[in-house]
Length: 327
Image 1 (cartoon, one colour):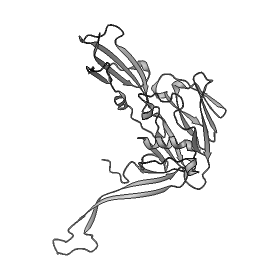
Image 2 (image 1 turned 180 degrees about the vertical axis):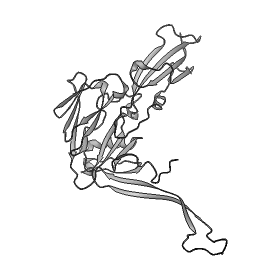
Image 3 (image 1 turned 120 degrees about the vertical axis):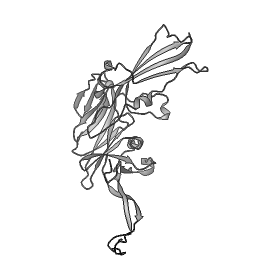
Image 4 (image 1 turned 135 degrees about the vertical axis):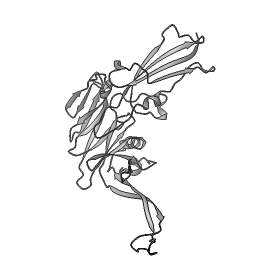
């Protein structure tokens, strides 16, 4: 009973696992190549079409249930009679693995940040992302939060509130006794500069905050076009010297900010890398959450050995024109 082809029904949906729609989002038929023993279908990009991230300082869980039903057909084009079809279920986030992680790496199932250190503005409440399925409890200083998972996609990623001026976060497995990760919190007092909070979608598909505490500079770049016009009046064959020959049009501008982290530990290199690789970045600026784009296209990692004190200077461009031209 050799395999000839498969039929894949792919369901991508919100809510509880049992609330799958009756009609699949995708139905894919694929035949086996004669020289191969199996059939491979990449579903990652198909699922990602349904994971659209949005952020307005609200820390929402963006996850989807993915159910794949695969029916196998033999060389006579009849369905297999044993163990057919097969059903697979996944919970999907908009994350990614690195090349060196190999094929289909499973990302963290507990704390959804890479670094063991976070920096928060003094007297400011923070947010800490965890994956509910893999965490039993979280202890922030001496306060314990029991994690529950009701199976709904809207709470698979949970953002725990970190009280102002906390010092440590300890994440435990579902047995409530195995310590999985310890996060050290540094509360930074900055009396002179105006700190800015950057929030980005990290490699786990969770929103992560990164504060820039030191010097900020702002640059406005202008774009325009010009043309020469005829300013001679038809009636008198004269012109006014208060009118210019050259006229601007299509004038607009882009604002760019240059931010500095202040001194951080070498452990933060991973966080900076994920910021650079993120497609979704926002800044809290003048009491608004605004989209920005990292302006730099290269990152030189800093180390204590080479640089002694580590400070990152990063350019961010607002992801919109200065003059509103949305029609």
